[in-house]
Length: 115
Image (cartoon, rainbow, N blue to C red; front, side, top):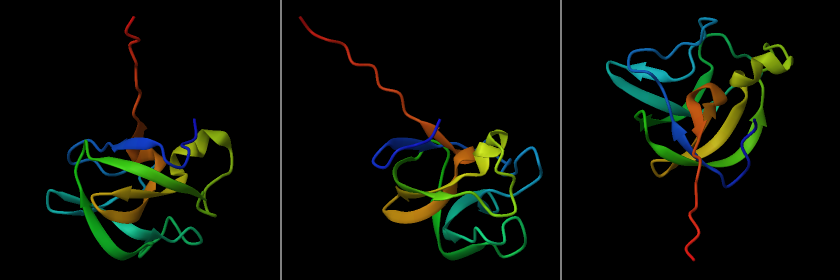
């Protein structure tokens, strides 16, 4: 389930847990605060210093807009089961930053038709 440009998403991270099941960090953390980086280095992730540029503070439940799909880190298997490592450019809290699909959820809309 890929996101499309312009789609609304919600940032989702369980409090105190910012690692994947594989043990890879997907957001920056300082104390109880979480941050998304301006850029994730797709050529070196997962390694140290993969998050670059300005950090934008985010909280679970913050809403953003998908700008575009950036790709999957080169070190991560291209098998579809690894889709949660796909990286998107998103606009959230007034800033453009990079985020892993692992931390993003689609917002579903249900419209009721009035007769």
